Length: 263
Image (cartoon, rainbow, N blue to C red):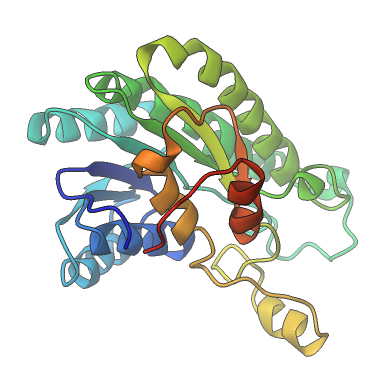
């Protein structure tokens, strides 16, 4: 049986859909209080309403690209909770960035509008920095876990993955630095990623269906659920500076001799 997470408080950016929504659902089922953060609007409120049927979920409007928005969200959390156990930077965009929707599959980096490049970097890299900068002080109160949702190492340098790949590479480099800087504060910093094409709203329309028709694997949006449960559990004590691939979690645990009781 998985660890009981009653009393555990987690923040998940991009928590209104996709991987973030499923990770929120997972932690709620284990008794955690989960704060889902996303740009305000109907989708965020609908996600909160659905998740409230499972457990104690809160919702806060936060645009990770906007410093003032992140500061306001951090103040909102600090007013309601005396600490934070986990902050998951999951909000991200890729080839679904505004300005990239109509680019042909064989586009080159110089075909991409500058505005789209800035949007991806602002969300995937600067957004992680802004969230870490404001929420780490809450994690420091008891020691906690900072998690960055990235992509497969091969995707980072694959042709056609600019600017998404470099933005995630930057986030992973930042994680490596923060893991060392925050080690003495008792904060674990880790990277997680699905490990392949995942059926979320970041994927181009019809891409999942095309992959399946061609016999190529498509991962479900729940692929990181067991990984996030592991990082929220005592079994992850001392684990920092790692990159954990969701679909390969069992092999990763076995290689390190770690016993983890599944949800």
